[in-house]
Image (cartoon, one colour):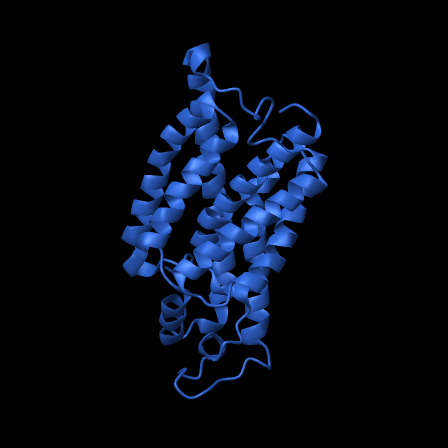
Length: 267
């Protein structure tokens, strides 16, 4: 609970269920990737994980912040959320690795007539190159701007919708600026934005301007949350970035491929 405050002891079981469901969902997602664009496997997994998170797999920041304040650990909450984001990044990477492995095993076994003519030829889901890293960094930066504008509350459904929409547009821009078929950096871009958002949240609440107000228990984070001054990016939990953010990235990169192909006259 100290390392992953987004779940806490009471949410550990739910977190385990979500992680187990995510691991299981990676297998059929890999099968989908085998018969079509590999990105479709990531999208399918992210959609399943997003629905699980939005349906109660995770929790809202308000409850997490209240528990941290009651335990006297409110000032370090965002530091621990940043550490949790790193763990979720590893989880996302593991899920994409499973999807890649299942797709690689299943692709030769899919009859040629059942394979769709897709846009994913040569795509390396876990690959890195200079263009892909630049595209991922652009996606993270644009996602941060979009999240700042779209995340107006810390309610889970609003957070999930805002992150999916924001990172969908961000990945589209990132792919347009620096297209690449090696997409490893794109999948990690929401978690990079999460760490930046938590650094911003920590600065806004732990600094001299954090302030308190009646009813917040003297905690600057709760004061900012209930006073409407908390940065939007700081209102989402790591599980939201790892699921809804990834869902948006997969969609945006896929649309970016469509546009790229259309420009080349290959459609």
